[in-house]
Image (cartoon, rainbow, N blue to C red; front, side, top):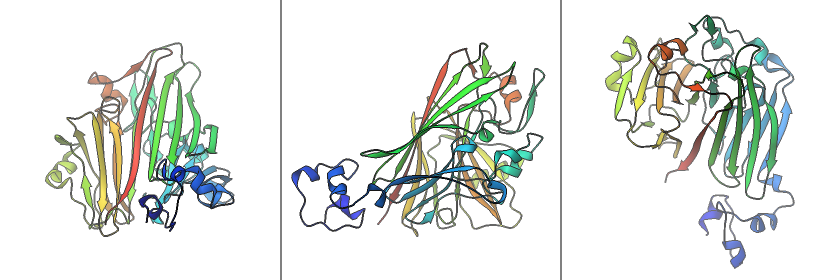
Length: 354
């Protein structure tokens, strides 16, 4: 049995030499000889929610034929909501769920009322962390970009991969004009997802740029049978609560009633970093890969309360998690010049273990 066909659960006794030259474990010839429509194994579906707090919001569902099934949220900055691998959920979904951005409020911690969790919640594009004031300007908790609807520019199934692209503009008259161009790509029959972002300052003036990728891992992948992998060379607690748990930052416990969140900052030696969670009882591992030249910081959000059982793995472009004003105070605030762009690439991969 050929390894590329085991992944699909197919048994093929004879394949031509042309078919054996696979791309991502498959060839278009092999697949199209066996299906009437490629949508039998891989597809991109678009639909609109019609009820509850998410009414009127768009969804794009990606099914890549290799076991990955995920929802992209165009009305939440092209973030990722539900995601599963071969039927196993990977992300934590909050009690608030995937709401319409119309319910968003930027006051205090009200961001939490519309924080749906999901695999990815983008924080930025000019701040992340708690709300703050700087030079007379209010910057809300985790920024505004996650509530900005996108213009979807591409959603298709190609010969070898699925691609979804969009543009998200965070702008205000007399203030910032930041454009996020985002592309998702996933190989047909594979178990990876590539996120490519480019942020451009389209204002005539320099402006701050902070971004944090809030990945939220949930049960059943997250469980007390799972193992956390973060190859950091230094770990720093955010506050006194985290300091108490510093010696056990890498442990994963069962839910504990009344657990208080702990946040840790991680530093790395290598440029290419992979962090993830492995669950041998399920036989799968989820990894998140990024470059420290693009995203030099990683924050770990450890939360194990009942109903809020989640491990956040959060690459960021600023080693300061206390808001824009604190980043500016410590000389750590990145500034984008007019017309300047910066790019980020993150790869998610799921692997199976024997």
